[in-house]
Image (cartoon, protein in one colour):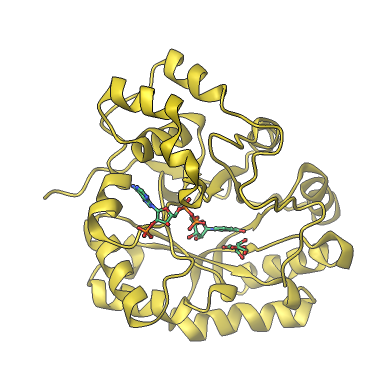
Length: 281
Ligand SMILES: NC(=O)C1=CN([C@@H]2O[C@H](COP(=O)(O)OP(=O)(O)OC[C@H]3O[C@@H](n4cnc5c(N)ncnc54)[C@H](OP(=O)(O)O)[C@@H]3O)[C@@H](O)[C@H]2O)C=CC1
Ligand SMILES: O=C(O)C(=O)[C@@H](O)[C@H](O)C(=O)CO
């Protein structure tokens, strides 16, 4: 089967990435490598990893086994909360590279701001330095609220290329997306399928899916694309990986988008991880 053609998005630093990526959280060891090789073979070109996923080595191995040239792939990793001090952050980026046996990451993101520690600006200056050293092509953040973004931009003059946040129909993040857009920051969606929560059985989404002749997962992922966000779905096996990638041959109508917009919930986060208070190390 021919791999779907995936549009390209351009970041504020001129780098490019595909309009959809592959999530790798919980894909570890040789089984994880197999799932990632499969994802690359069916057409994914962006792999989203993190130091804390303990699978950067598996990502590097999958890239080598896939036979796809490194330059055609985009690889992301993330700085954990416990290494936000400048020197530790640089050493962690280097360790991420050693683990993956890569020369550079395309994207390296601060994983969580952990505001109570007051170190995310220092971590940001470390990523700026790591980029200057050529270890990272694009630098960005995850889970940054407008107040966190304003602070790092004001204190360093450097705007992140990417902000990766929880985003799905139950938590559509309209204000955060508008803020990111206004600052030229690309929003990436984590848990774009709500980590397979009951959202995948939602009756409204089912109605839209029936109308357009696609699966609920495809409707959700197409919704992300039409919002201008880049979804990073994780799926273990090739059929779902292909299903999730096949969202560029149909469109949701304005009425479909409006119907999905009605699903937003005041606190629609799947696991209540509000970056103002939730912290990960
Ligand atoms: N920056 C951050 O703080 C965070 C980043 N992330 C990133 O985002 C990625 C995606 O988020 P994640 O939390 O994994 O959850 P997702 O929303 O991607 O959902 C993954 C779940 O959905 C199932 N699934 C996938 N496709 C389908 C389908 N077509 N039909 C039915 N079920 C499906 C998967 O099952 P199966 O695997 O069995 O196929 C899995 O259980 C992560 O892997 C990670 O890379 C995630 C959380 C936080
Ligand atoms: O997957 C990620 O990137 C995370 O940050 C996870 O730790 C996620 O938030 C989670 O599953 C916490 O239990």
